[in-house]
Length: 295
Image 1 (cartoon, rainbow, N blue to C red):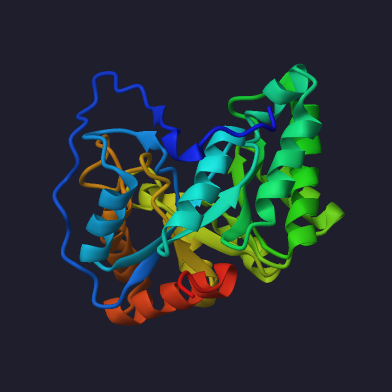
Image 2 (image 1 turned 45 degrees about the horizontal axis):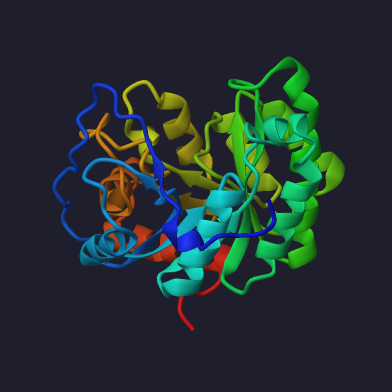
């Protein structure tokens, strides 16, 4: 498992079902460039844009870079390759909480985490992620492996002095408790924040960052808008989670980094901030967490 094939050839296919798989038109460019803090560009969807095409189309609308996130050994290797090969990509690497029980069942979790440890030493790997807890898709016998993996990933983020991106689904209290008990990395990000205003206050008070995705625009996501309203501006990030969570009015179609302006404009309106001011804040926040993309 530790003998890596050429990661540049790795591609995942997303099941299309009955969805509209065409990409939406490009939005109006942002006045100041921002960054997509979390995407899965190894997953082919829609018209199957290449990584270069994703980055070009993003740059045209004011998205200056992407944090490409892994969730297993193969996608983490691809993420590290993408970052090493493209000046507008940084990488996050991890074993996703729903993958951890599968590795554990094969007696391979320790080996998988060792691969992540090796990848995290690369200079353009700037985060451990996505890691955390997911009680929606995993329950019962799979939970101990999730906790074991989460704590191991926390240790890796501290060891390498890089950020950590958290996946938290239906496990808010347990994620917060684990971070408090074990000690969170200095730069901890709630990827695709899914809590409410109360959780947002706790997270911000502890110095965590909250990353908002396209689902903040969904009609049934008032909890996310309430959380956004109480989050200090210097703790807000924005992401796509592409190809998932495409913002309104394109919900159900493939997401991509070039659609970040749709979400950013929505955030600016919700916060009552001038668009250029919010863009500058988001860009500064991203650099605070991950460092510079270029150079």
